[in-house]
Length: 198
Image (cartoon, rainbow, N blue to C red; front, top):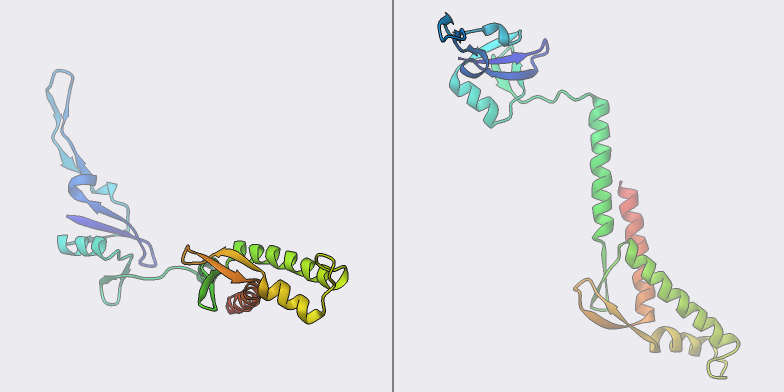
C-alpha cells in the first residue's frame, strides 16, 4: 500500500510506501530466539494521509503533483506561493533576463557586427576618448605643426584613422573611428531600451 501525507490545504507533504517506511523486521534475542514477528507500523505515516493505488502513486511522482483536490478527489499540481513570493520570483527572473540581454547585446554597423556589452562599451569609450583628444589637438596646436579646420580635423581623426577591432564573429576588422562612435551611440540607445523594458 502507498500513502500520501497532506496538510489541511491539500498540499502534499510526503509520500510513503508501506513496504519501505512501515515495515518492522522481526526481533531476535542474542541467542537467535524469536522475540517478535515482523509487522507493519502504520503510525510511521503521519496524518492526515490518503491511501493510494500504485498507479496514482507513480503519477504523482512522474508529473510532480503537489496537491490533493478534495472536490474532484484527484491529485493535481497547484501553486502554493503567496503573491509576494510570485512577485519576488518574477523580479528575479526579470533581472536575470535583463542581464542576459545586456550581456549578449550586439550592434551591426557597416556590415560589422559589434559586441555591445558593458566591456565593449568601455572599450568604445577609450577609443573615442583618444580620438577626441587627437581632434582637439588637430584644431588647436595642430598635427605635425599643421593646425586643421574643423572639417579637415574630423575627416582626419574619425574617417581616415582606423583601428583593428574584433567583432562579435570573433574576427578582426579594420574600422573607422566614426564607426566606433556610431556603434557606441546605437549601443547606448539599445541599452536604454532594455533597461526601460525591465
